[in-house]
Length: 463
Image (cartoon, rainbow, N blue to C red; front, side):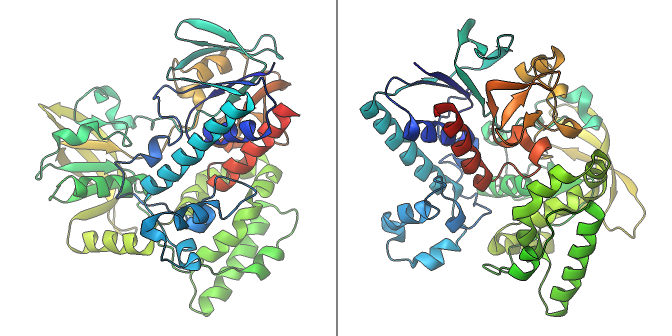
């Protein structure tokens, strides 16, 4: 009997579970661990987040790799969308909570199929506290004080909390500091006139700002990030630059790709088109190029190009972008390039010293800012070596696992998605999916990659 464990009950873990149920023979025992107890939706797709929108069109949000229009078919069955044209729905940016309803239904259907097929599914709302991979073919994990053995182990841990900023290291326990922007418990203490500082200027900042306004905040919000790049909208829906995409070489250095990209960027701008569709055209090839890059090229990319890539890749729906611009126009959102250099407690508030540039051509200035809330939206920590006490940090320190390239995620065989030990040997029955493969694949967190990886892992386990 196969006895399989999945660590993580979010989209990645549930995608693997659904594929395993689809392929499994009777007698399979599938155990899923999740410390939050949020099986299926994950933190990103909770019902309370109605104001938060998907940043990918609905037509690309299917859970099923062989049914790319599955989400659209589900939408067509919902009364609110029954009259909408499928082609229009495919281009729509819908609430994340709605997608969460779709995932929850597909997961419930999979559990029903499992029971009918003689597949046992056990959901354990518990944290995994340690791993033991000394016997490669029989991985073990510890949860709730028990050691449990499995014939295969899939790590689908998802995103970790953001790293504490250097200027706030001494005040991480202060009630005004919010490390977890995806939790809304801190909103209970928000007042209409609260002063809020957001660290970071990406998609999480946008979601947090929407939550703040929905909760009644009336005062201006300050956003501080190292580069201060503004968010970009999805400006050219459906535009496909096939000539550029199909003309890309099989192999290319980082410098060669930059030359090709900049040449194409000048061509499309001559026609009044911005460069974002070029990013979309390059997107299907990024995993291949990332694996070809030398370590020096990857380091250069992370140092010089990562933030530019992130801005161009992770865009917001056009009407949300309009809302952000209106907030800035009316003085309700200020975006600064800079960082917190010092902080001290002032009762229930934090006094911050910020080194900032409003514009690139303006010299940096230092100013003080007193805040009721400092919300960390700098993005999830991706280096498990820096997460003291985390089971993956302990496994890396013990040599049972290896950190991925540049310390991002874990080292793995990119063909099979099986993890490597401290000596580089590939485990026969320990797999990773999603964010854990960031260092190996770079692009590994979008639903497109998740569903493909889930199918590959499930096929390998059940073969």
